Image (cartoon, rainbow, N blue to C red; front, side, top):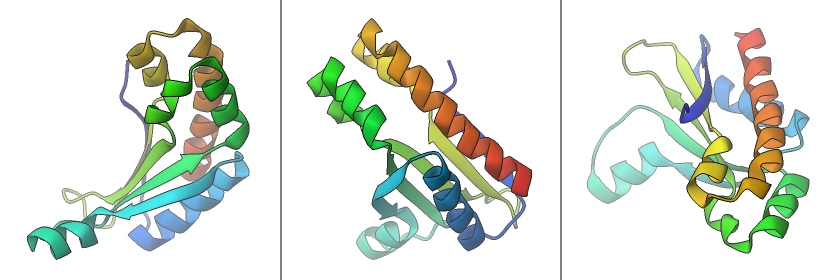
Length: 134
């Protein structure tokens, strides 16, 4: 099982972030949290790295279904989506979404399979939309 659903975009980082937010919104995901890893590492450790942003995406109906199956599944919510510059290929931005099937695998809860499948369909549609825009 793959850790991520992903695509590569030949656009600047800021444009990739904007497009990612729009593609997620088109699939019913809002961004609840945002972690600027580059800025955090610079501030806390005085370490430089490429632009790297973690978006905590949530689709409320899917989250509600998952929590209805197992309340502890909140530990794995929201769906993390990473937008990061590729240090090996300047001008290229990677967008990676957590594979929702991991939620089933980690929890061992088969009743989460339909939720994970629906979440994967929506996240893959967002990723595919980004691929079409490169």
